[in-house]
Length: 340
Ligand code: WQD
Image 1 (cartoon, rainbow, N blue to C red):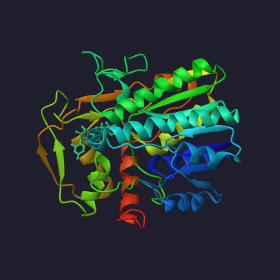
Image 2: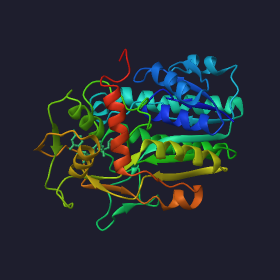
Image 3: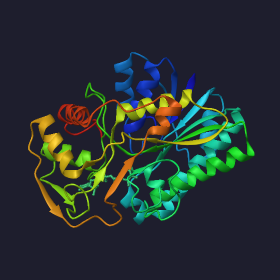
């Protein structure tokens, strides 16, 4: 298939592009490069020996995106483009709602104009409502779309609803909503990886930047949670496993809308990650415990059984693999991609 991949130059998008090309698909990337790099695309081309067609365009600009895609043919869409910084979304809610919602609306219109029915959407574990007491691992039947603590998370939940409503009006639409847990790691070559602009918000890029000496120490947000060591527990999934989940989702598309968790089913604490990363990299990661971060929960771990059962997908890489690959990326590219 020829697949339109929005946000294909970003951290997750570049790994998805690589996996699609290696599976024999053709890839058309649409990206505005506001938080991504052309170099990521070039490196995926190098790694795969295949070329990627690229359109620079802001999907939230209806006239521009519809014109840019007018003469393009594609069989399916993987929609990753969007803003994704939780803290920034609290400070700039209008920008987040406008960008993330309007992009999806425009894309759904463009798909209808082109008669394209296949859609894989990048959603997030953040759409789940706060877990009831006693619920350890979240499955897709858990309530979602209430009690979300930031506009970024709301845009993911609202996009899920928009896709469901559009499918009701266009029953031939085949959509999958992929609820990512915490993506980490990099391609094992170390050629592509996560290159956040500014101070990293997420744990793994912060840890790798401490290890390479760009940051003095990690602030651990709270050590009094009811977890095995008091620090927050998350389900860290290797980005290559996550990327392969998109391929499985494409193959599993059928009319309707289905949500799937992409996670490992295992929980790791902040201190588990610090230890695993130090062991994998041979670098000390200095840290200091500080106050909890507002909005954080003690634990968020997937039940990935549905994706295994219905898509035949499961995460196979370990947290040690993820730490080794993150370090390969960070140590070979201490300042990320050039020109960032
Ligand atoms: C993981 C753990 C922190 C940084 C968020 C979004 C989610 C998704 C991924 C988008 C927590 C702790 C972190 C640090 C720390 N979205 N931590 N010191 O909060 O699970 O999920 O990012 O892109 O929608 O909500 O991920 O990596 O920020 O935090 O102690 O400097 O690490 O408290 O326990 P989170 P995270």
